[in-house]
Length: 323
Image 1 (cartoon, rainbow, N blue to C red):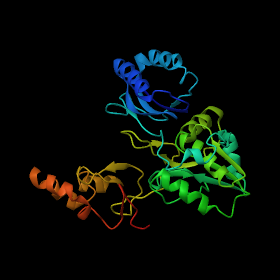
Image 2: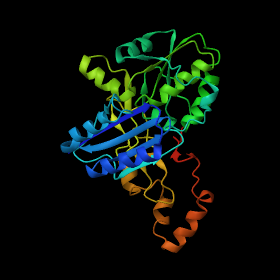
Image 3: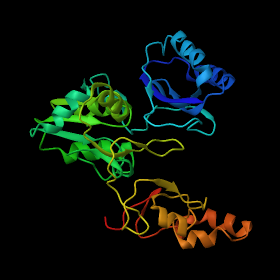
Image 4: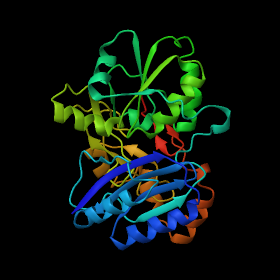
C-alpha cells in the first residue's frame, strides 16, 4: 500500500546538491518513489510513499527547517501500488521551468489564495475571469466551467501567452488555477508585474479543490479529469467526459496513452476501440515500425523527426483532428 502525494515550497536552499543527496538517501531507505526537483529556490515533489513508512517520511519532512511546514496534497484517486516506477531526485536551476528572469520582477508579490468556495464564486461572477495555467493537453481532458484555456504546450509558453491574451482586461478580477498550485505562485506574481491589478489563485490547485468540495459538500464546478504527471496520467474530478479520441475523433474518451513505439512515444487520447485495434500504438505505421529489426529502429530513431509527424502532431502530443 502507498500514499500518493505532492508538495512544493519556494524556500532558499543553500546547497541543493547536498540537500538532494540527503533526500535521496532517506527516501530510498524507506522505499519511496517519485519525481522530485530541488533548486536554490525550493523543492517540487510528486511521490508515492509506502503507507507503513509514512510516519517516518512525515517526521523526516518536519525535521528539515526548509520543509517543516510544507502542506501535502494527497491524490484524489490512487490504487494500492505506487504511481511512479522509481525514485528520481534531480537538482535543477528552477523547480518549474518558466523561462523568466526572476531578478526582473518581485517573485514574492503573489496573488492572494482562493478557497474552493471562493473559487466557485469567481466562476459565477460575470466580471471575473478564470484562467487555466496548465498546458493544453491537460485542459483538454478537464477544466473549470468558463475557464480560459490557452492552446500552449509548456508553462514557459503560457506565461508569454496569457498577458497578451488578457491585455485589455487588466482591471478585471483574475482567478488562476493549476494542478497543485505551484505554477500559479509564479504566474500570479508575473501577471501582477505586467499590470494586472486583481490576481488571485486557487490554493492547492485542482487536487485540493476536489478534497474541499467533498469535505464541505460544495458544488463541483470542474468538468472532466485532472491530468497528473505520473503513471496514472489522470484522476477523475468531474464525472463527465469532455474530450474525444485523437485517433478516430468520434468516441468520447479522456484516457491518455503513450504510443508503445518508443521512437514515437507520443502522448494521445484513445478510446477503447482504437487502442485495442492499434494494440496501444498511435497509428498502424508505428505498429508496423515496431516490428522492424533493432538496427533499423535505432537508425530511424536518430532521424525520427522526418518520419513521426502525423498531421495533428505537436511536440510530444497528438492534437484533436477536429482542432
